[in-house]
Image 1 (tube, one colour):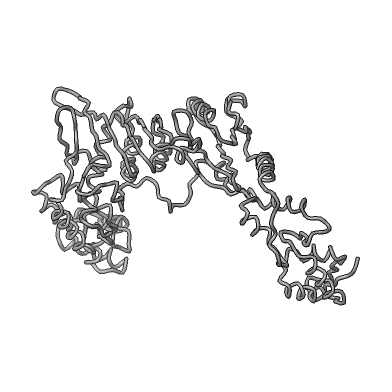
Image 2 (cartoon, rainbow, N blue to C red; image 1 turned 30 degrees about the horizontal axis):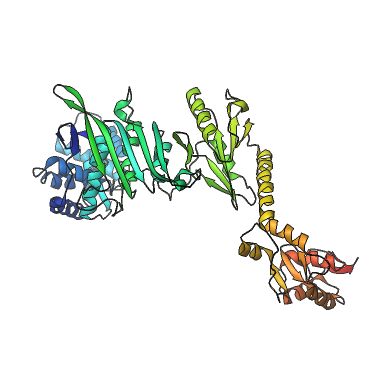
Length: 533
């Protein structure tokens, strides 16, 4: 975004459009980038003095491009002693009005001596924290075409501060735009064009085109800067989509009063001689979300939830955008195991209107969801009419045991489906040891379901026995029995097990099957013995 005084637009027949930079401004961009590179190690004042010499060419363009380039600089005071402290020391040394150069120099010498620096160093450091005296420590390289592209994006963002509303049509990869809208608490509604014969509830998987309507900053009775910034920060997300078009009503001041003008743009526009849909923005100014940042939580209760281990269920934060009537809904978490996904939404203390809208959204969601509700809220389980929702109230702590019971219920349902799907399992022939995990992955079934099916399928005439997560050939077990029957120590038995490449998890089950027990006489395997029961 740019300061509003740097926004350049042209109006015609009820329409408004920024005056974009184009290929004819490449030399101007190159000239500014070279000036920034030259001034690395110099003061900010020196740089701005050089930039001012260019401003007569096109003041607002030069200032706008400079604003973007300054965001790529690291500018710091180059001092070891705090300038504020030095100024306090100098003024504290003054007992009267200084009327001569000699008196001034004496005071500076005295203060410099206290800090073990020279008078010249003191004078350099005294005002080093003023912007014009700060040093340009680093400048992040950028190409001229990328700079002009970012300038054009900034123009649209600045124009959007005056938007009454915005209509966005996105085809394809629109998840990031919806996430930005929802996380920024923008006021919106949407409808979609579904993929034919697709009933997926996750809208980022089952929808071809999304039409979003968003209330703009100028529509709010008292516009907040935060809302305006959040609205403008949608622009980079929109431009990163493959196919998009936008239409906005812009509030425009004229000598005869305010008018509403129309702004339009699409992925087919040639903003800078390059199609934005084909050339992704490498460095978006004011990027709203950084995927590399540490996960942030909206509340301590969400953080607490994320610390739990849900055993074989994997936890994901804000995993998907779900359809909720004419609105979208991002649940706080998802818990996933195999083909099962159960969403989790934590509803803490919010305003009455927020809670009312949240209930309406949840009741429209048609996927398995667990609702954890602060019991201080004025609502009850009957307020949530969704047949897919499990509603639980919490006081201060997450009801972990109840959540695990719900997940177990989903597991049992899925196990029944898996059992029906699993027919006779073909055990690989001529193998002494078979890993059930590998077999389950090969058959694309749950290990638990496969193991239960194998237990039902195996009988006295079968070639294999089940030990832990392994099928072991009976002949191999008999061979092991012969090898260990004269052994006394557990460590010797372990050597035999290692010889046959048995996994540690089956040591005790195999010994128990053969009628042995381990008698420990200390912590070492060397002193432990095996005995027949």
